[in-house]
Image (spheres, helix red, strand yellow):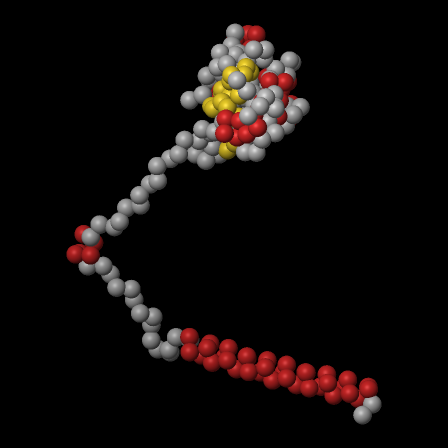
Length: 224
């Protein structure tokens, strides 16, 4: 048999098989359709009305889950006042103004409104001298520190000594957190382990960001 004839016979058998299966499928669909068609002259069965006894049976109530506290692991932007949530419109101007992309929007499920936040344990605030995130706010939800008389306070740094390199080596091997901290006399060493002064620590997270340990040997604890 020639090669051309061989291909022709092969395609012919394939098409015959396909047509056969298509016919079988069509017949099956027709049978199912006939079974599901309502019988002529008969109206569909009416739904049974609940009796008076059944009406008195109380329906189970949906138990509402207790709401969890939102933002408990996040901090508000620099300069946030006590009236921040009532003044902020969620315009995100502070987010766009941050040169280090530290701020990000968080949506409140109840209202669907966005509010800027930061997580110093994930990305540190660099405590910019000109505070571009504050100066760009059009609603005065963020007030310059020189006007409010307050200092940045995102939380407080706390050492996790079991993760510290110095704890593992038993020597003063690392002092990266001391070098990274922008506030003088905030990071001190007790023996070879870091200690953070709560009076001056801003919780900016630069010490966390620079810590070479994994897991991190420093964590920012947020103010309640």
